Image 1 (tube, rainbow, N blue to C red):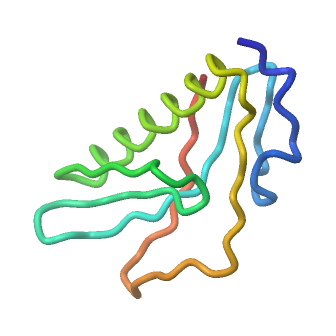
Image 2 (image 1 turned 90 degrees about the horizontal axis):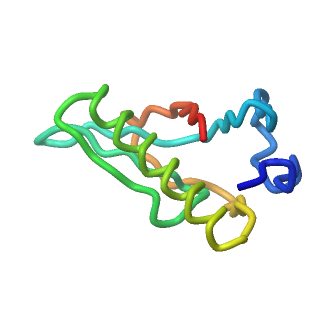
Image 3 (image 1 turned 45 degrees about the horizontal axis):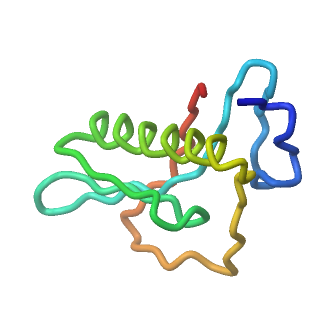
Length: 103
């Protein structure tokens, strides 16, 4: 589980606080209010999605999803890949959040 192999080039260009020696990753996610709570997803990392009854629960759940993504990446020896997309389809009520994960 070496963080030294993860390069800045593989992370989103807006990431400002990636410190490999400390194992801190910062990701962008979109928080959406739903009829029965909140959903949150990572547009640049397909499959990283979660939900919760409250904002805090939703953010905690997406943090766990990111941590699992990092863990699987390490176990498989595959570096994290940022998937650029030209424009994210969003609703007016969408909230962009930064999610910090220590892994």
